[in-house]
Image (cartoon, protein in one colour):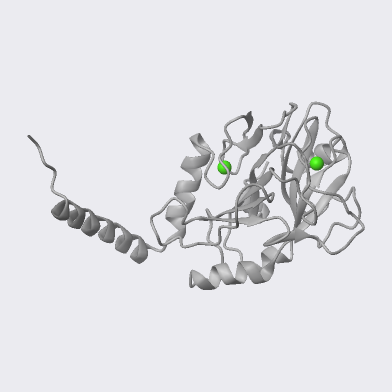
Length: 267
Ligand SMILES: [Ca+2]
Ligand SMILES: [Ca+2]
């Protein structure tokens, strides 16, 4: 397989969480499931909102739910951060309505855990696509599922994987969609397993995917191990050198200030 960068992939699926599949009214997504995307190349709100993403049926033989990002929401996130594009290393979560409110704070120039991620709630910052030729709910299946993102708006039919930008999935007995994903992105993109409620499928690798099924989900943060090492490096490279030096300098000054205000008392 070619490295993802050479394939021109701008967004990858980093993790998805399987819940109980109960869909909140008007949202077309399970209340307690999530999809975690990572931005691999600088990507604007317009480009992201021209893509579609979704899941497959449990048999991984047909596309099921089709969503798109709400451009106005993404524009407001970027505007608040004084940026025109999401930087490589950014995490975008799309989650069901029971997994907390939207989190739209985004500032990669801050040195905080949440600086690099936003969380969108189904039906708000990410919505069912208006086209109805593929018209299911996003619900992660125990037997199998494929979670995908496509440059088609939307795919032309429920077996169309031709414009997939990236996809990962799980299935002991892969159907057409899972087999097409394995052929396009590598067999490692389909984990041969079932997944009970509460299990997440997570990439523990980088651009070469290495999937695990885990009961420890990391919605909104890097997945640990090589995945964290990779995304930490991607983020460091995405921040221009002057800002990085300023960040380090500010951190040192802040540390001195804290120490002078709060001297350590020893007895
Ligand atoms: Ca599904
Ligand atoms: Ca994660």
